[in-house]
Length: 134
Image (cartoon, rainbow, N blue to C red; front, side, top):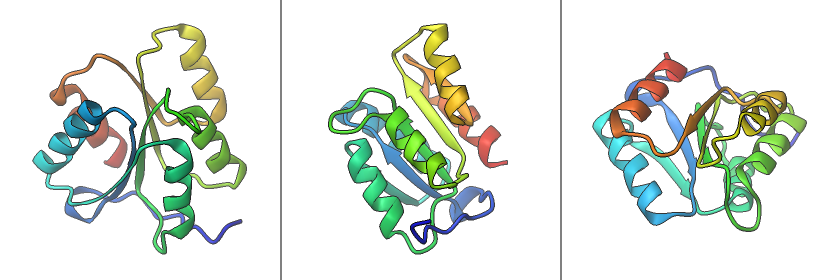
């Protein structure tokens, strides 16, 4: 393994969250929700490769990864696959505009914790994050 810490689930202010989202508007919405939840320990990445680098470099690991599916360089599903291949069991919330049942099945087979289709409201995202962290 790459020395990535596998933390127990965190909640509230103590939670460490990694967000992989290439769309600036998507990042802004997620950031707004996390701020509203008073989660201040957030790391942002613009693609799956930079998200993976953040995971490798993190000393404590993350309590939650929120990732878009479609991103340049490395997709969210590729990030999830790499994490699970390295036995990193961090909860993973996949956000996607792909509404296909096949996509949800593929993500579940890869070990996704939860799946959120776009578009979504800030309240829906907040509920989903709370559900995962608690």
